[in-house]
Image 1 (tube, rainbow, N blue to C red):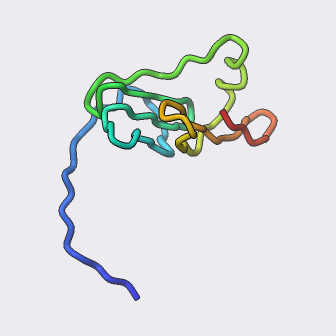
Image 2 (cartoon, rainbow, N blue to C red):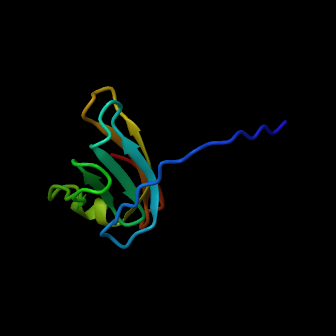
Length: 99
């Protein structure tokens, strides 16, 4: 059974400054200003909403090699209110990764 109801969307254009295929988005509950996005070529975040300033996550030196050779598929909240788990794939070894 398919039930369709009339809905109203409040669309808001957000100019995303990175050229990437976006796979998932996470907005912290109760604070729609902090947003994290998983893309094919990296992880991105904004601390001031979807129309605010976007930044690409920069890993530390230890994680930079695996970060740059990975595709990111999904984001989920972690037990901590300020942390997320990101699942993806290391494209060189074809192995699953979780950050």
